[in-house]
Length: 269
Image 1 (tube, rainbow, N blue to C red):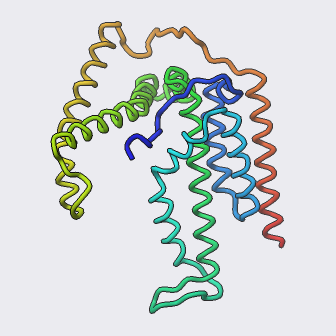
Image 2: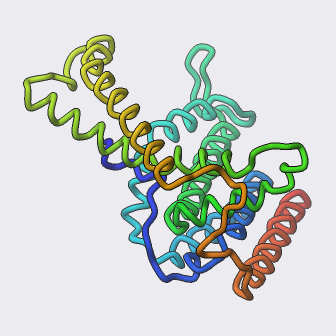
Image 3: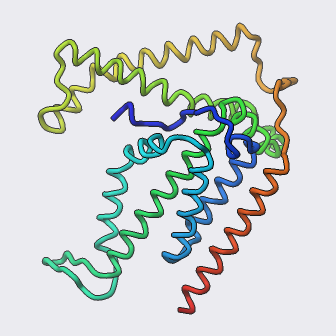
């Protein structure tokens, strides 16, 4: 399960999505998330799902990576779908005591499940196709207006990026520690819930120690390179908007118009 977590990983490539400006990708991701929540019926939600799948294919990243990201939240998706199954109106299809399943409940469960899957797919595109340095620069540039309020934007962007990129490292470290404990005879897969939680203590303690050690090494490396924040800092690679970013933005506006139209047609029907 630990190896299946792909959050925070960057996969280099030369696809159209990889070549988009990092700032444009962040803004378009936020717009896509808004559009997915704006979608009010299956027609508009299906449109957003198809657009998300098209973006995934344009990244030229193996679909297995996206399936791994879906595998991690599978339990969350199933749990959310089951909860929404019992909230709805319409004809009762099955009833047992106070528990009943209606047509509206099935509609809600399927709708919410598709929405969550689409959100995970489109969110994975950003980290898969954007390098850590570009992501840091993009966040800093987008938050630059906050410097008027004397907010240290560069430090915030750096912390966010480091936290995101350290996720795969810590997961790999967790996997190594668990394998080492299993080689010593530790049993982490049998017994009740409390026994399994107790069995994780020999994993969590070395993991915390390793995390603090890595953080200390990173801080020392930044000090040795005379890092002092964003004041007077230059960049080897400067972000620039290109024609492909404008085309992507126009296509996104067309998608938004199509979603609104689908919602209006759904209300009239």
